[in-house]
Amino acid sequence: MSISASTHANQFDVVLFDVGGVFLTNGWDHVERATVLDHFQLDRAAFEARHANANDAWENDTLSDEAYLDATIFYEPRSFTRDAFIAEMKLESKLLPDNAVGVLREIAASGKWMVGLLNNESRLLHEYRMEKFELLPYLKVQLSSCYLGMRKPDPAIYRRAIDIVGRPAKRILFIDDRATNTEAAAASGMTAIQFIGEEQLRHDLRKLEIL
Image (cartoon, rainbow, N blue to C red; front, side, top):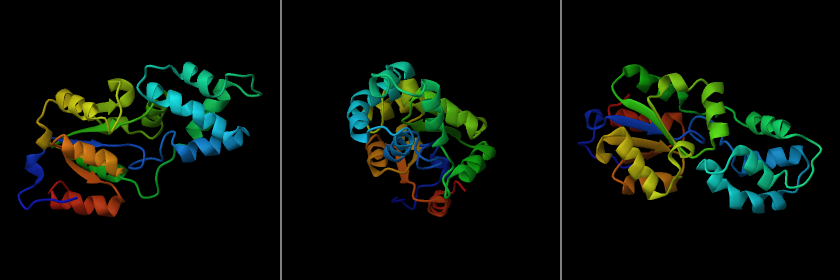
């Protein structure tokens, strides 16, 4: 991230984080999908073709969990249930070894900024992960794709996030592990940090006088 000498903490009112790749493993990315498919001995290529057609609608909450699973898995009889498959999906969510949860807690504890999320995730996995890893107490706003009906890096989701938090884009700091998402955030007028690890993030936030 490039930070100008004049950029500092009092220029921000809002700090938004991604979830997968910043706090936790991804909810349902290719690694997680492969593990679960292998567990049930399912054909990856067949699944991925169907997943590609259904995922955006599922993460935008225009396709229900049941409809997503019907489209990708249960379009033919299986020897396992939907509940068993969902349980295995959830097991793939873990804290990253080098995560930003400690940073989230410190920023939230200061009370100086509106702290929230801007992430792509299905309602099923997002709400499970928030509860399982006890992230909710630190958040003032959850701008997840499943609530907004759009996904990063669509420019529209950044505009919607700016409208919801009610602050100018330049007063919003966004942290995400994917360059495509931070670049889109910067194009919207936000300041963006690409997350590589906790040490790097703390270094960048100290330069901004946030930590």
